[in-house]
Structures are given as C-alpha cells and as structure tokens.
Length: 163
Image (cartoon, rainbow, N blue to C red; front, side, top):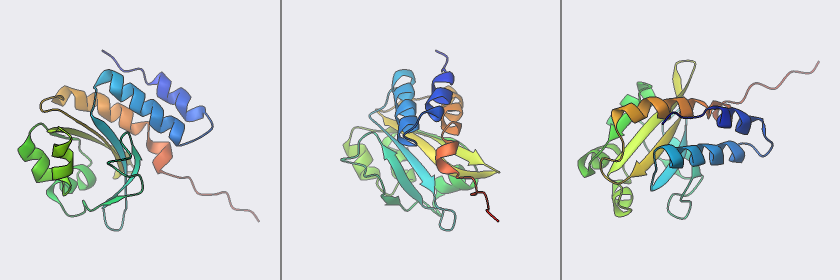
C-alpha cells in the first residue's frame, strides 16, 4: 500500500495548525501501519531532550511532557545521527527509552521512530508504538516521508522585520 502525501499537503494548508496536520498524520499512520499509540516529539536543541507536542493517547502520554533522551544511545542514532530506528522487542524498548515500563505496560514491544530533519539536524520525531513485530524496516522509509511533512509544525520561519 502506497501512502498518499497529498492528504498531508492539503492538511498543511488548513487553518487550525498544527493540530490539523497532527491529526492528518495520525489518520494516515493508523490506516497504513496501525499503532497502539503515536507521539510527535520536538527536539530541544540545547539538551537534545524531546518535548511531546502531540499524542494519540494524551491520558497516558501527556502533551507538553519532557522526555530526557539527550545523550542516550537511542539519541545518538535518531537525534544526532538523523536516522530512523526500529525496535521490535521488549529488550529493544528497554534499551531505548527511560519510560520503557509504561510503554511495555500498554502491550507495546514495537517502536518505530522517524526523525524530522531540517538543515542536517533532527528537529522532531514521529514515533509509532504497537505489539511486538508490528513494523519492519521497509515501513521506516514510508514513515520518513510522513515525518518530513511535520516540518512546518516544528520549524518557524523568522518574522519579517519592519523598518
């Protein structure tokens, strides 16, 4: 099944941003990959920690919560290395995330993460979580196309100067 990026292009043009875009990404990911929960994270450049800016399960994964990922082996791959990451086991989730026990308690032993890259730096991450072995390496290429569509929500252009 091929993803339809046109839906995301259209979502970017609608008022009510970034919520409209986040919900469009959520719907496409649900239809294409499935997930138990999805989060969109924004990297904080000074610390390389991440801030949760969208959650499909806000009662468990609060929007606005800080996730201390800077300096972790996972961050070296996804944030520093600007590469997607796939974990498909309990052990990989435990290796990657400080909140692994919460993730695992939701029945999620698979996590696929695709960075949003701008100017050679990871500005955010699209993260999907589901049952063990729900995702494969081939999914990451499509997830990366979707994640890049989040860029306008993560990078604000400078305001025009007035003289």
